[in-house]
Length: 320
Image 1: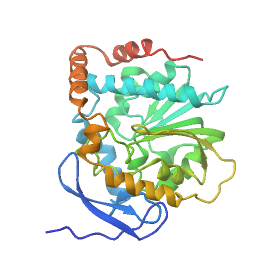
Image 2: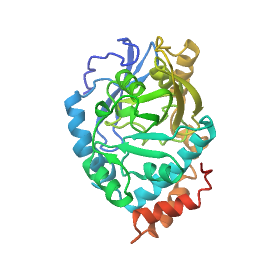
Image 3: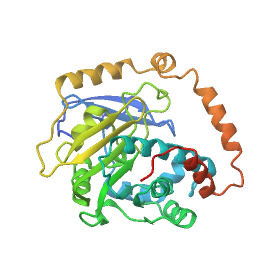
């Protein structure tokens, strides 16, 4: 039996015109109904969980569902440290000089990025809804991670906000963007990284998740932020990274242009095993996983802070 298609309303443009498809949750294998908005091209879950369901899930279940642990394991620390270096390089290449000093990481997880950002010269802190991960960050790295949500933050309290693989989980993206603009000082910057629905290097078995409410492209992410932010730099060869600058005055949302919508439809129709194996590097992924597994096998007994220090010291980041 084909599941009934639930009511749809796009959380970016408000349209009810959509093209639904039943996909599989990449963790559980359960059916997941995903829709592409025919007006703005945003890909999203057709029926959204309630705010209370999301609050309970992220404060208690999300980390254990996705990491199988209430605290990060050494392999998770290593992976987070390597990606932190990549993100700091992106910021170093695109932030203005003098760069912002006060950094707030929303959804800070185990605190690895906050710790690495501190070592790179930022006055960094974070917020994280999961108590196990936020407690680990404070005890292991001595960083300032608060167990709290976005709504609890004071106005104009940061020069730079970072959100890594968080924005796709937020049920009300427009409200979140407005709140972040309020948290930033005038002329402040926002860096968002999300999975890229148009990327070629994502396995077809690893695209859709019940915890991901939205699946952004560069077109829909910049549109979602456009009322309060203008893009400074975009990188979308793999995961989607965008650095935004806060506008002084809010403007009307700039929805994706017709050619961007056509591009999204064309790219989505091309996604599959052939593209992944031939253009997305799928053929070499098993060898890369084996290499990482060997490196991670050497982490036994090492403290998380020691792992991060080694990664930072070999990362070659410019300091200030």
